[in-house]
Length: 390
Image 1 (cartoon, rainbow, N blue to C red):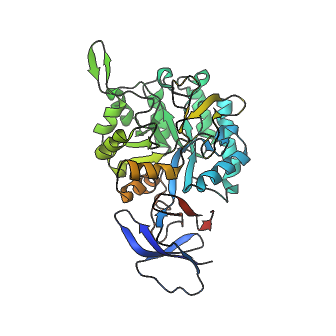
Image 2 (image 1 turned 135 degrees about the vertical axis):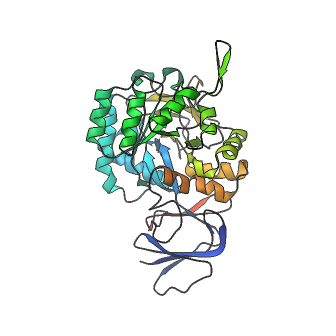
Image 3 (image 1 turned 180 degrees about the vertical axis):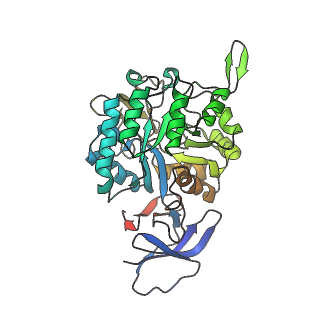
């Protein structure tokens, strides 16, 4: 079926085209029109002057709708994909939490089993392993039972067995972490700096060994620190100083207040920032208590003030955000131009994870991953590879 969306405000990298139309067929964008065309035999959808945007890409998400990827069942994987698609996400990287080797491999097995069956939700863009090689003092809500230094025998086995891994978040200052960074980068897997006690010089070394991304900037890492009376720049300052480093941010308005969102944007720019939800199972629900990680052995969390927290309120525990909220916060609260906000949740993450030849922009020949939303960023319709999800 040829589908034609008309009468929309179409968002490109640099402008918003008024009264635009977009034609797609067999899951592929065929043409963008600045004036209403007459396409014989097409299903016509009137956007009613709402925005036509590339589908949102979430490169760091743990769960939603009451499910977590760590639950490890195909039903949970598919449910999470469908839940987030209803909020505009058309592609995502399922993300693990710190676990033992068996737990990590169980989730990777589930991804391989589920990938081809994912027909009614956001598409899967490869697995993101978050941990278990983290700094204990910056663990946040990661389960301390499983945090450890890089284990070559363990990660060699995992990397040999699974082709679905596209990203690994690691504390680069740990013994063996530089070797691991070089290895994963050589396999075209993103090596990302995360949950780390690293300082500026550690980051420079990490970059020399293949690290190219900073996981949820500001969260679970050092800014300026003082040691033996001297001040040292941390990961935050390194991310700002090195233009080569991409960063991701949890733009839910809770993990980072508006002034920090504005600062990151001012320094790094939309081309180097990816907006992420870091959502846990309570996202898109109304619960007040939940579990971070697998239901049978995860951590208890509470939901209050629009964010997930550990019960003692010592740390946030992921987010309950969906992608539409990230857009709303960055546009409405932080005052960043909408084209730039959309770039941070479409084109930039597509480049970082290596799928920009397929998605992330509304260009002829790309996948028809499309979101329609109104001026309040209420999602009206979502298409994943041309299939209408909502």
